[in-house]
Image (cartoon, rainbow, N blue to C red; front, side, top):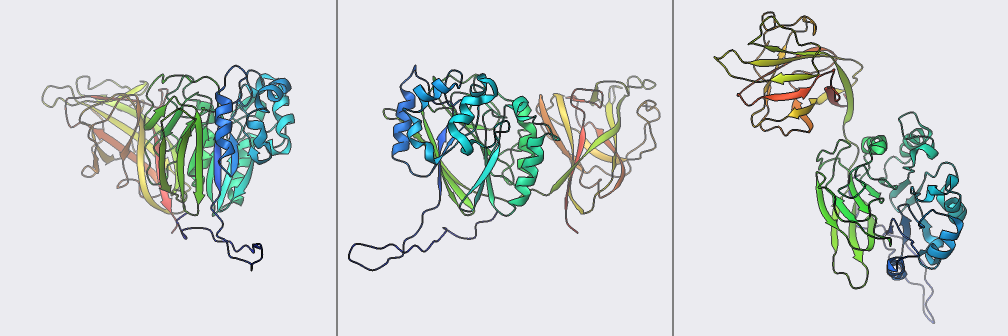
Length: 451
């Protein structure tokens, strides 16, 4: 939500020795912690625990709390002598190593009610003007991470009940990561629900490194207006691992033991990575929070095909890809046709994009035109293809391969109805995208605002 105040004020009557009551300014809440923590074979967990000794606030953990198996003995011998002295102010999340013990019994027994209900491991709490959501990325034991799973149903209801608060969420396995384990696609739905609700920050562990990402949407696309900023903080004590790849939108990566400290202000937050003694790496910054994005509705493409000037009587309606290529004058042009039915919109269309998965990119993408809908994917050919019904509405420039790409069709999709879309080449540098028969079918994303 927008910043409405510089700080949260609280009036506290504090009796001073021999004096009168005084007004004290209450500080905004601090959330501090890491994941992948207590390991009896290292001393780094003791070093991060020493950092906690000098930092007030609520302690979070991001899973894999006690190595190697989250047993009662692991917690007693490894966690208790280090992070255990901050147990009373700790709000944990469970990791896969915690579940190496059946049902994560050692984890739930150790943290008690602070870990949420056993068998679930997801819960929420408030800090100042913020709502904090703790989720369980061990999807099987948690009952699933799908749209209809108990955890996701609970998450939607929990976020609806906390409407108006800034939202931070944390769990173990990250959706985006450059580390050893990499991305965990199973948590995509969790991201989507949080994104739709206007959440601001996600914290994860699992990969034994520190990584900060720019604000992104659930598809990994930069979104400065409504994206979530993800921090991977698997730096609590166990051995660190080097970078394995370079995930898109990764801004900072380090293999340094330490903690992430966040100060949660109304309408904004500060972050600071605190390294253990003897390390020099730091990372800090501030960002404003935001509300939810416009309502977004996804529609499947009902039919698509490309046509080929070199093969004017051939039909490509069963192909797994759509091709757009131009070589005017040499009989090699290819154009793509797509059809989509939009229904159920109740607001005003603010933006509409055709989201396509790019197999082979291009340095000069196609133009988008409106066309008729009286054609069928199984019978359309170059010779019977319909013409554009108006001038082009958008012109794509460079389109990278191996990623989703949005083609703006706002000028075509103006509400409910069936729409025909034509992608026509502007150069001989061809484009190939997945069709409805491909692994990543195209889709229409429509954003609406209230009437």
